[in-house]
Image 1 (cartoon, rainbow, N blue to C red):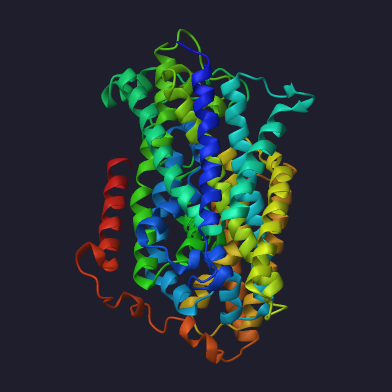
Image 2: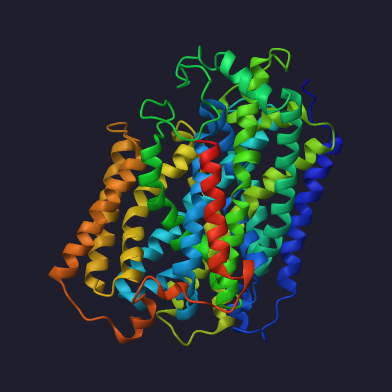
Length: 563
């Protein structure tokens, strides 16, 4: 039965949010100017002191937020486990980060990835990537996180869309409050505050997700009962016009789908398209990779992403599966005829209908904290980009204290821009679709330039710049056609085709505008793909090569089981 949020639940939420902000501010108070890297290095890169467990947890936390809890459950309620491919495929790209990209980043000792791109190619490439990285941090990371967190609050309160509070749209009010709270502790604490709060919030987030999944799993009666219920009943949304669901749920537990699947995610689309999105997101995006840039040394920079890859096994079972369980519970009339008002309300529906007093508030707090951790990660990377790529580049003698001040004001401005941009995601059928469509238009040229740039010495700066500009133009045209409903194709295949076009552009431009490899860029290119696989001193699972092999084997087995 549905039980409303009680004063106990609301007290837990308020206390938790206050504690998170307090923890972030405390991290800021503990910063010392004398630590390695100076005040600026400590504020933006935590003084290069991060060990692999913190790196892995922080990367996972920066990725997993309320966006995943809400949007993966939403997608699973409509289409089953298929969207879990975005979680498990990430394991493969994290291995690429560990093996091939992280060592070059640590070798260059850069604070930002645009800086890396300038050292490898030229300043024009740095400028393009800086703009794209700022857009990614503010819109894709922060905007969507604030939107979904506000949606969760609206659902928990039982407010209908469009409801006003004190004359202000409830969704916009919640977005603003959460954005301001996140901006406060990120501004004061820097990256150290981000990783501290991320580590704590990730644990609570996982606990909350495990509780929801476990309670729902036990209520449905186990895996066999779940599969039998899904296979023998029509989908709850099958009769709802415009839901996109017109079929039963017999293949809800399969990850590989054919071309006729309503989800639009055929197996070949995922196989071809995800690497384009994944390499950009996990290997070339400042918000995610900044944790690797802050590693103690190369060993920790390699092991951190691999630890994150292990953690990426969990979301399918604890973030995606609850949406499928909710379908089966509704089919069995477990809620007395009640069902989510829309697929987007799936996770909040489970919270309000499955959990007891107290635990309900704790899980709700975890969901809000998850959004805040993603925003704080993006805010810190935005501050780093502006401080180093816009100011220090033009004023090399600027003091660390001045850089930190610039970073703090950037955090304030970034928060305001994210609040303005967040309603953008209401345009799409599902929130998860919106995120990945935007990425599919942004990622192809960056993925092409980074992959060719680190594995092939011949591409010139002019070739890379041409590829970035042409690729972004193609991506914008594709976005415009989609946004205006002129053409909406398979966005994963579109990402792959855009990537192929960008690779072709870069190869052609390399021969049209040849230039020798810059002396300072020679250490930023692998002469042979086997070079980064040489022994690094570790043994057993501390050897990144052994650990990578184990991770690849685990994901291969999972795909065989859930094919």
